[in-house]
Amino acid sequence: MRAIMTKGPMLPVVTIDDAAIAGDLAAALLEGGITVIEVTLRTPQALAAVAQIARDQPAMTVGIGTVIQQRDLDAAHDAGAHFAVSPGFIPALVDHAQSLNLPYLPGIQSASEALQAVRMGLTELKFFPALSSGGPAHLTQLQPLFPELLFCPTGGLDFDNAAAFLALSNVACVGGSFATPKAIITARDWPAITALAARASQL
Image 1: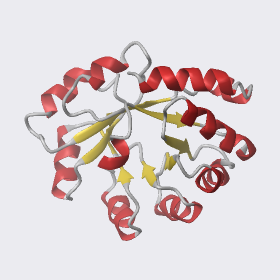
Image 2 (image 1 turned 90 degrees about the vertical axis):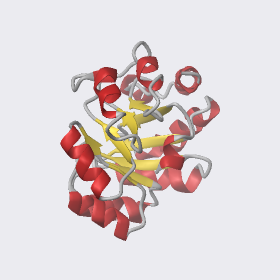
Image 3 (image 1 turned 135 degrees about the vertical axis):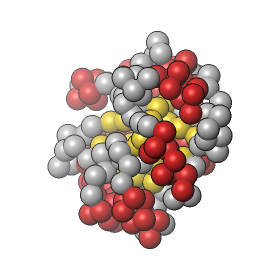
Image 4 (image 1 turned 120 degrees about the vertical axis):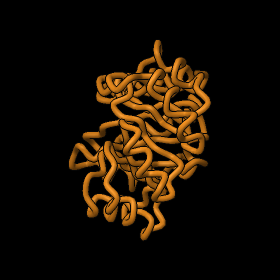
């Protein structure tokens, strides 16, 4: 998971209603310098979109987000996802992802959850919801307690506040939809997506 998180400063989180556009979206992001994408399991088309990206855009590392059950991990694995992401921390999901040999990024908020993750051998975590859970100050306080942990903060981030998170030594990348607004995806404005991706890749 660390190798995926360190591919670039931005992990775009996208919601795709029409799998037919997934390849074009991934191509637009790649053109702007973004090589990792997380497709949320919030629409019936999500798994088909992941399968299309994995098949048609091999340069893109594609993952499934909003994983909350073991069957979500199975579906992500079967669709060809390269990694999976959850909003929270459930040990059974960690175990199942490991059994599938699927890189997995569970979400945490507290020191207690961070401690549990460390005890399970994890060193990469999502910090969610980042802005409302204490922001950069929270991660700064966790760093001396858990120096081995590397985070991807997600939730409430934008181009204006992302740099404050990326400046921290325990942050590898930031996640969010600010480089992939749903309205622009729906409009199929791929040059706009490429421009936002280029801006995000320079954070």
